[in-house]
Length: 462
Image 1 (tube, rainbow, N blue to C red):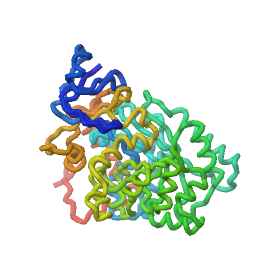
Image 2: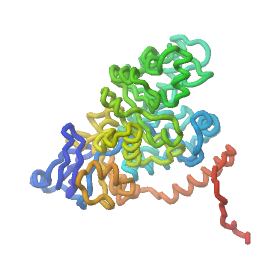
Image 3: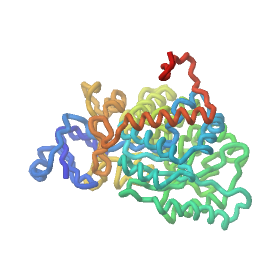
Image 4: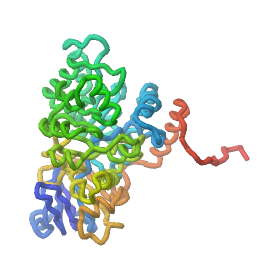
């Protein structure tokens, strides 16, 4: 057991209590107690102590849209819209990528996430060719929590129930093996492929088979939805309906479904998502950077849609900083609505914690600091965030990943004093830089640099 004292706990519980001079007791993987230190001191007098140094205790942040396998391409997607972005960078990279590089990219991303206070992430399109054994082992070594959306697409040709079921069963062979592995840190979902542009084909039997398998196994479904005006217009022109209507008619909406982006969602579609209990992942930084559109977050929340937050990825964000995402979410909605109160700091903090837990169906385990929940805890240093009048405002508008001091996942300390425990971060960075440069040369990708680079002389040169 461990008792963390001398903290202000932002619990994110049902009452959204903020407990000053708080203590939090961790027993194994779970939170045993939380409350005023004076109330818990006698009950846990013999428990080892960790002085929180007047830091702020938060539940671990949950990133519901994080392409963790793309970090070796950081900065190479600048100034690109989605189709050249996919066709000229992402697809060539995936086609030629060594699975070892996929693991390295994920490691780089996961280290950045942990140092930013993210304890759980959803990777929506994990390549079936990846080495799942090595990937899950890397997740366990770092101690982060991952939802891996194993990419699944229909087979070309006949759209029969038999073909669809065979495709789904093949995917399930891998998914069942790794789901709930590594002490529960790893979960497997269906990373669904749906029509988004010319050349894509529709396979109703396939979507129905995925939906049925999701219900039977409890594995969720995640896919990009209404992300750009082009894919929304494509669905409407090709199928004569809005994307949410298409998804509903093809059985891929519901409480087990997480939709990514929704930048061009209409009021009708918001109502459909609310009625079906479907979740949304909002990625404001990447949406702004790629000029893809704006999810009407306030309208969605007011209609009863659960909206969470995601960073998207190092290729088009270009970071995994959920503090930056929270702040940007507020600024974007306020600007778009021309209302300084369009999205509050409190709402953004909910989207990064308890709403993120709801998006992955795990509010009973994650998203708040409460007895019985898993011990995913982040301690935030107050530096650069004083004085504190409104703690939610300070966390969202003042803090960033540099304020993250200590992180626990599953009761295990994985970040201490801002550094990932048990990892040589410099060695990882050097390996990532070397492989990233090789990949860029192999794919003949431009750095996009506008300024001249004066490189150091190599040994033997003058």
